[in-house]
Length: 152
Image 1 (cartoon, rainbow, N blue to C red):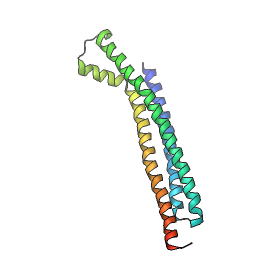
Image 2 (tube, rainbow, N blue to C red; image 1 turned 180 degrees about the horizontal axis):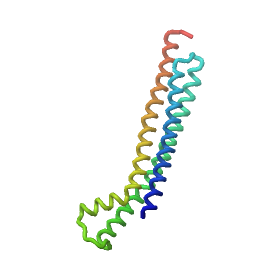
Image 3 (cartoon, helix red, strand yellow; image 1 turned 135 degrees about the vertical axis):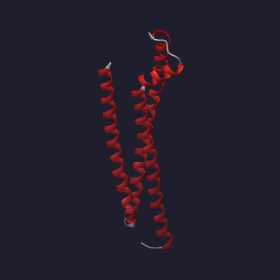
């Protein structure tokens, strides 16, 4: 049973490392885009297109992780049911409802931690999407300002 716990910890560590790397990569991309806002007007059109492209990529990645999470959710519920049945009928010690809940929570802790990691990453992507939208509006406003003032 202990080796099973170690494997779960390794899997969670790998997931955390992978998601942290993805967060760092997206942060670098968004910083790069934000720093380009002050570019020349000619380059603003390219920046707008690049930003829209990254927006789509973030949206696709967020959707991908939503699907992963929603695919795992029924598995988690089924696992909770299985453990509930085990503690209700086959467990050698009689336990009450709150004790069952604590035992079940301990048994599914890995699965819930995985879901939490994925949910946090989805939240990060949603916030990144807002930031990219702000960059898009900034570029649009910059172009409109140049058009309104007649500057080149």
